[in-house]
Length: 219
Image (cartoon, rainbow, N blue to C red; front, side, top):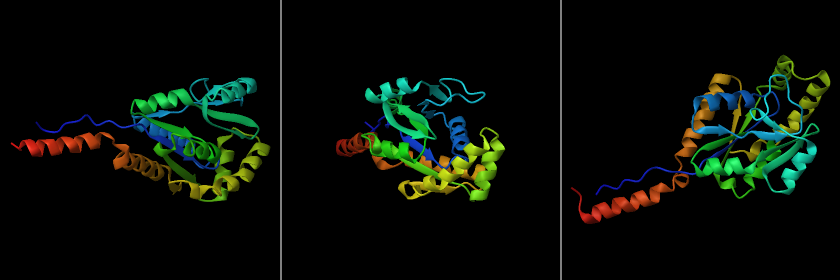
């Protein structure tokens, strides 16, 4: 009988990182809209919601005490403090998605990405760092969002070079000169990573089936 096995794989953990304003959040939204195999990891955070944000959609908004309880219980795959607020990725939904063969997308900074890469799930990580075309363009984008005060924007600019200094820790690095082109590259990276041999455990049994088919006689 012909060798036939249902293709199965564990889900990827796709990490997108960048200095604030370089485009990772927009790229994350585009990837989610274009690829039904990808789910977004909704982080827990202690920062207050911005206008239009919904609890459970953009973030799980929690108190600092609630967040620290999650840390103590080991309920977060990664966590970090950014601009005085705590952020973290709930572990259980991530592991559930991986077991179902679904990919999980993380819009997180280098600290969170480092923790996930060093975790027991690090083997499934695909990390992508997004660079701005220039610091002047980064500042323009931050101001154009009209979400933060001048003081906060200055803080984000000050942090940008620290973020950027970690670019070499990532598997892929893209300069976001054109959003459409960068999106296409991100989608291509994900497609290629899914095809890697070590991400397709079903192939071992499939090849064994081919060998049995040959031994039994083809045709």
